[in-house]
Image 1 (tube, rainbow over the protein chains, first blue to last red):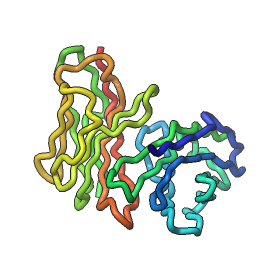
Image 2: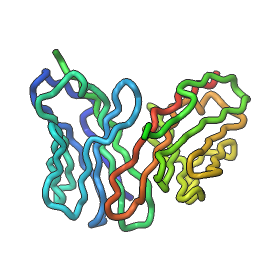
Image 3: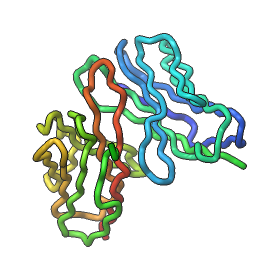
Amino acid sequence: AQTVTQSQPEMSVQEAETVTLSCTYDTSESDYYLFWYKQPPSRQMILVIRQEAYKQQNATENRFSVNFQKAAKSFSLKISDSQLGDAAMYFCAYRTLTSGTYKYIFGTGTRLKVLA
Amino acid sequence: DAGVIQSPRHEVTEMGQEVTLRCKPISGHDYLFWYRQTMMRGLELLIYFNNNVPIDDSGMPEDRFSAKMPNASFSTLKIQPSEPRDSAVYFCASSFGLGKGHYGYTFGSGTRLTVV
């Protein structure tokens, strides 16, 4: 069974600095999606970035980028030029494409604090 | 589009009462998901629909939980009778397709249910 591990329950970053959130996963499959979702205090889960496993190029969305290491089963999120509005819970999620199930497997989350 | 719309935003009810949570997915999305979020268990998939048809309800915790999707623009999650351990945030999410090109879920803002 697939698992997703976020080993950092909480992280802090100074405004305008860069922070990296870690995510590792375990799977025997070769084709899958990985996602980072942000959950601010407003509670809504917001998609930050998506990576397809068959693509070697790391995904980027403005200040957000990932470091996808398929062999190491690692999928970290880098936030550059951190802003106060980035403060939130961040969830890493895995979704298989090959086993016929459409469940997402979410990590336990990392709470990011942004210090002014 | 206004996104995925859930109502109510908050619900407080007494043990034993019936609770109905509502969701309007994004127009054109053909998949709808119900998730529950708690501190202890994280995000759990309860049930999902494809083209209004329930596909996988293996995550529904008990017979007290039921979900319907009478048409493409409306779904309900009902708990009858409710119990204090049902207290959680319930999310609805929708997506268009789940195969190659899937770009992740769009979540609603959730309903915080408190059963006293």
